[in-house]
Image 1 (cartoon, rainbow, N blue to C red):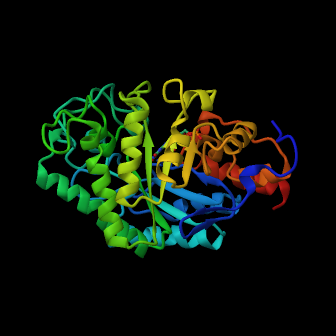
Image 2 (cartoon, rainbow, N blue to C red):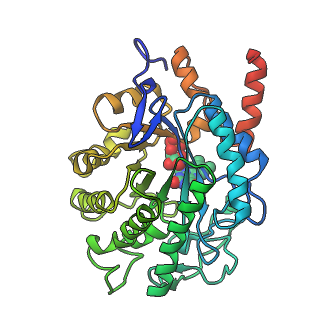
Length: 375
Ligand SMILES: Cc1cc2nc3c(=O)[nH]c(=O)nc-3n(C[C@H](O)[C@H](O)[C@H](O)COP(=O)(O)O)c2cc1C
């Protein structure tokens, strides 16, 4: 599909607080399970991330990266931001992405009960001892039912919060332009947000204003650690990797409570994943407003929308109707690490193929395409 007339609206410059982006297109966070066994980012990862910057993306958001040596790791070969070796490995990545002209944000992730590559696999940690729905993901080396997590006590919660804040400080040392707190997709912070995985009777459980408390405390702790001017985003979704149909039970009212708490805690942007062929329809809360436009209105913060945004017409409509300030692109970026350049040239994006989920297929494809056009 070609954009109808003139330059595509996603090619306008963007802004998140102090952070300037050359356009409104971000690479969505994508787990690649390609770090070394101890979680150190590799040279090949630097090549992979630099490819998106070379392709013209205005912002690169990394894969979910674990934040402490206790329970946060979700997958074997997931990168961490815990040790000096991790920081050194990431410094290579940020240097390469910056040299290619884009800012880069590190996604901070605590897997909680959805861990299948944690060093003490038989005892994951989560809000309540509730076995997660579904089964572990074979593509990440898991099989069978998830273990029942150990209920986190106040000390374990404080340790997790500290892990996020210390990791943000290390991320800044590694040259990142900001961090994104992963509160989506069913991982720890989303387990606290979700009614059926959070059965706590303390101040972290019960009504939505309590269930969002941990995510808000994480954002506030990071903000206190990094100061007022550095980018601290938050990613949210209603669905989860192990539950594709979940919706916040209180609809727009829950959404308003969540958005307001995160903005109050000091978030710089909200990044909201929705899904479905007709994005604007599936992003509606009940019959009403889209989740992203509501987030913009409630917080006044920049909002990144995600889900099928590699389609030029959908992307243009989402921006034109004010549903989002920026767009993030996952599978479409694997297929088109040069998507912004294609849009600028009015060329159709290449189709996504599941073979591209191979961690570095994107890199091999990009090399082939560059050779083909002599770039
Ligand atoms: C291989 C793969 C890995 C992913 N890993 C993450 C992740 O680490 N963190 C995250 O927030 N979302 C992750 N996602 C979700 C994507 O960021 C995005 O929400 C999803 O692919 C839908 O967007 P799209 O239609 O542009 O692909 C992943 C998606 C894919 C395909």
